[in-house]
Amino acid sequence: MAKKRKIKKSMLFAIGLVLFFIIYFVTFNFASKMEVTKSDPVESENQEEDTRPLINQISTKEKIYLSHQDRESVRVESEYWEKVKVLFSEFSKIRKPGSYNPIYSGHSDDGVRFSTDLNYFRVYTVSKEEYYKVPVETKNELEKLLGESIYLSFDFVKQYKSWKTVEISYNNDVKKVHKWKFDDLSYKMGSKRIVGKVQPEKSKERSKYNFKISIHGEYYDTTIETMGKDYVKITAGSGKEKAQAYYEVHTGLYDYLLNDIFELESTKK
Image 1 (cartoon, rainbow, N blue to C red):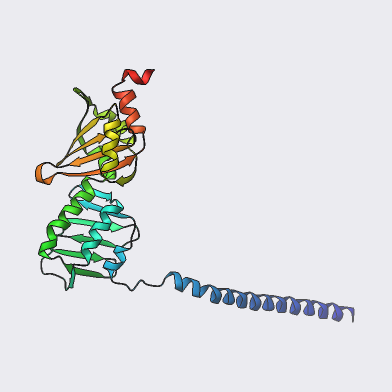
Image 2 (cartoon, helix red, strand yellow):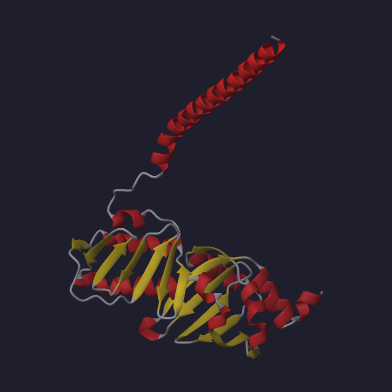
């Protein structure tokens, strides 16, 4: 009899253990499904596809990078991108052209890309693309803006690995910067924002010292003129092709030229 009781107790314990695990797994699966159901709307909301035309999407991007020839992913100043976007209203959507060889290409920081041969403008992602016709009367303006967006960009000017020779002048005193010092000079260049012409020119007139940095790179020449401690003027090209931009900058560049390059006496007082 005692043996039978022990067997019954063992069976009851085993059955109870099995029931416990069954209830546990059912409850766990139910809770998991409820959690997935709750999170589904958020996931679908985050993954909702932007159905706007691609040219409208690229117009809303704040960070734009532009490439041309061997100049790769130069950050475009927002003021220049605003001017480029104005031209988009003149473009007309077309089918894919028979011949297309892009000169400029660019991208946002979240996957929307574009390119142009100045006759057509292509905007694309991994899943779709759009082509637009650039009006003949807009072509020159587009080329000018894209070129200035690169060659007058502070981000581009600082890329010392593309520099071939650099000279810095103060009045008639000209100093050549050795290649192993290029990075030192580049690191001193820090811009705050692009500005208009009036304030920098006034600052230059008031400043006792102003310096000129002449950079000769591969296929380009650029000059940077300090206009007091707080501003610089960047000039690219020459003659009819000359373009200029003014920047408010950090004072580190001015101090470096004044104290380390020319060691002007007034700084030692």
